[in-house]
Image (cartoon, rainbow, N blue to C red; front, top):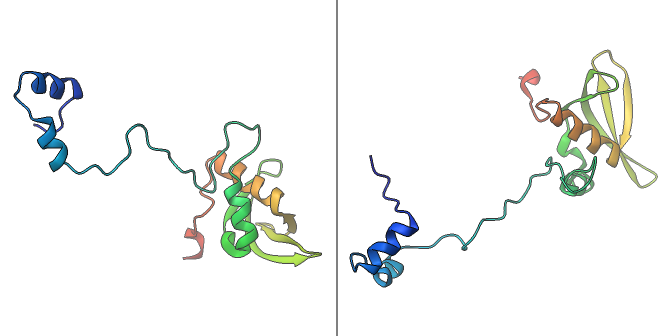
Length: 136
């Protein structure tokens, strides 16, 4: 089975032996990507490898712009080992605080950096933070 792809050294050898016209191929083949490896843009929950216990600032930026973005996300704080659900956000003294409800009914408020760290830690232990299966 052939995919139609040819290695660059094969194309170069065919061009040298005049079995393949590179100029014609260059005019006919569309190029959709830049040469070299493509930069992958991380999502909001990506861990930043360069900093210890740091993650992408995109999550914090998005939380400040859209506080209800994480509404009903499932999280778990490793020190409690209890499942929690983010229920809402409020502005207090110019700072957003997110209300997190534990399965036993307790509620705590977390500020932006804290809730972002809890979300990142929950994702690191394998919890699907964005799942809404329990609501359906």
